[in-house]
Image (cartoon, rainbow, N blue to C red; front, side):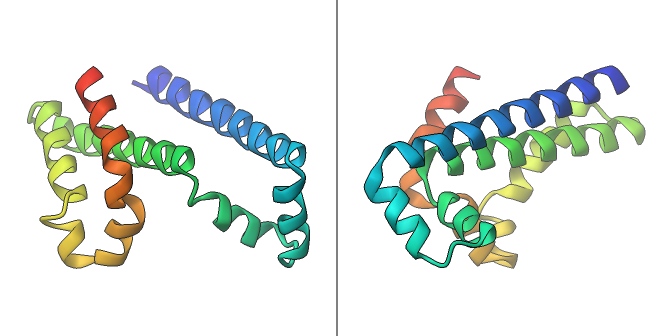
Length: 127
């Protein structure tokens, strides 16, 4: 269990850093994007928030949240003597519009915007 968790965290960190570097260098290639980034205030947090609205960033954030929630609830359910798949199903219900959309509609709209659901459905079918 601990080895798998270490592997997942290592993979997320490595690919997260790689994607950040690719987006950072890609923004410098396009002069228009670099100009708007430099004139928009220039602090790192606002640049980070602007890049979170990129479709690929949203997809990665969705996948990270879904995987972490499924693994965490699977471990909790396994600890109480239930199958891990029951916790993973519960994570899907908690992240869906029936609970997250009801309790925190802004978070649900940010994390799962309507225009990004096509790519997420494609990956769910592959899974």
